[in-house]
Length: 260
Image (tube, rainbow, N blue to C red):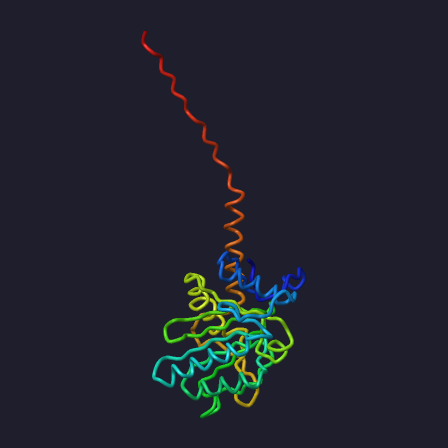
């Protein structure tokens, strides 16, 4: 099964950045089959364990996870969310993020486009940071990360947090359960975006954006450049492995004369 955050479109693939997953996990593949059966009218939506699906339960389950982080923080545990989107517009979701911030949850939002949330307002959103990265490539992937009191959950998704995505479209968010892939997203991918000081702009409480600059003497960090060069390096290694000369092994046959 192939699940992705973008489209099967050859033109936009050249300028959009997306994430995707190839999996044979039977729980996920079975649930995808259920989604298609629901869309074709062969079955009603029964509710799923792994996949979050709009317009059925995506928004409801996102709210539940935000409330879970809020409750963890309110009980003295650590609360952390990192969310990467194109747009953040839905009023109910924004109000839940404000609640979580007031409870002490640290929230980092990477929102490329429209953001109707106002960060860094005392006693409302002082624990929320919003940045936007606009570079050579269009940031199209959506990532939802919830710390969940030391049991982290990561979802990749096609959906922005907007009413149209929650209500008027079919969207899926799917979990990344493989520990290696999940750790790479948490420890490598998301920090690269959050620490971008070349293309990133930070949203202020008055709605303006301020372009971030690296501290004097600090290395220049640009997320898109890093991932581009990393992908090129992986492509070169793959190409070299495929074009490497084949070594022909010639078997050596030893003949032994039998003594009469």
